[in-house]
Amino acid sequence: MVQIVWFKRDLRSIDHQPLAEAARLGAMMPLYVVEPDYWAGADVSARQWTATAGALAELRARLAALGAPLVVRAGRVVDVLARIDRAVGVSGVFAHQETGNFWSFERDKQVRAFCRARDIALHEYPQSGVVRGLRNRDLWGGLHAAFVNAPQIDEPARLVGLERVKLGEIPDAAALGLAADGCAQPQPGTRRAALDLLGGFFAGRGASYRAGMASPLSGASCCSRLSVPLATGAISIREVLQRAFAERRQAVLSPAATNPIPLGAIDSLIARLHWHCHFMQKLESEPSLEFRAVHRAHEQARRPTPADDPALDAWATGMTGYPFIDACMRSLIATGWLNFRARAMLMSFASYHLGLDWQASGSRLARLFTDYEPGIHWPQVQMQAGATGINTPRIYNPIKQGKDQDKDGIFTRRWVPELAEVPLAYLHEPWLMGGVASYPPPLVEHLSAIRAARARLSDIRGSADYQATAQHVFARHGSRRRTLNNDHPSKFRSTAKARRKTIGTQTTLDL
Image 1 (cartoon, one colour):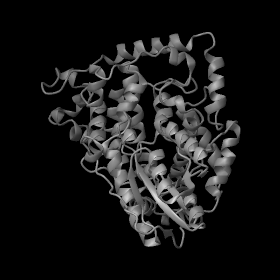
Image 2 (tube, one colour):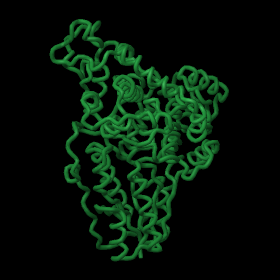
Image 3 (spheres, helix red, strand yellow):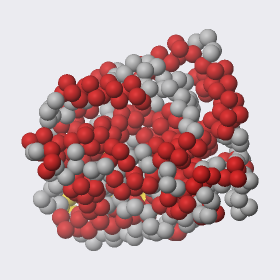
Image 4 (cartoon, one colour):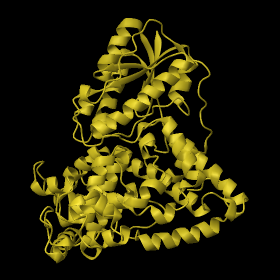
């Protein structure tokens, strides 16, 4: 009989409770199942698998050094487990809880049913501050803080693996039927990459984090860039947060002039790591958020967007005629990463300017993100599309955003070379100079598109029971750091500033 440690999106050996628990019981098989049905989904891509495959190779080498190399199999998880059970007998399966897409949610239910039917003990453990079975959102902050403040789980000193087991190949993207997607070198999702990113950020790369994160030009270097290894699970959110708090304690005790990055940059990173789990909790509590609007009125008002819709295709390929929108999209296609403000702007433009259904545009975006994290992605997609009922609708002006975030035109000229010779005064509005032959005219006229979007929103939000439903949504998913209809960015920043002043030199995690 053998213990199975089933790796999913938790590709690490440190701070890994299933691995540590199984290691205490004797013979084990670390297992990763490549699931072709998952990789055939509408929200996954070659760039994501490439990052995953790199993390798998690194994990296999580390587990081999500990005594039990990673076994890789392909197929349905229940079929793979059944074959192993027939061959050697499975006494227990150890795994992390996963907040994935709806496909993985259904897969996990099948695995639970399989283990019950075979009388195999299934041990599932939380791997982040996301709480399974949470009945009252008021409790989440304390539970999250307790988890991330708990000591990290040590890597086992030694593993006892099975002998004469074929390890199996880690396939490439083409073997999974994943077509090349324009991202030649996806950001790695390995632990080594995560530690290098953490070290670099706190050594000085994050010095301009607060000021630079809004621009896709500066954000690429000053943001933490930890989202890919966090998505593969090569490093735990707890390890990252505890490193951030250790750096904060050191910064508080040192003269400000000697700190590689300012205290405010560390606080901003901690806040965003907190939001990581906050948004994942939404999908954990309501898995249908992937395809159904959280607010009933917005769901009833939806109009499906066909997969071959010309406006959807133009937006998803960076051919809308709005230079900054197209530059951000083309950058994302080529690199697999984009800063948060630009992601929000792309989704806002698709929803408000083009009137695209959020699920159609959200699926196209998901495929482009190397760091695709369903628990963050789908709640954010709905939030930026204005479908939650509990967030202030944010309609970005793509012209103003271009002028504000790329005032010298460097980013836009790099990714939209058709406009390389356009004078800066016209770069973000080339139609004012008569247009450029090699670049498309705007798909829609900005002001009229916004007026139509506001009219649609007004009709939906004016329904009789809109606020009552919004209160219900807020009770289930809203941040307890604010009240309903009070999430305007400037107000939130003012409140956060006052709160930081009250906290002073606090060095423990207070969420």
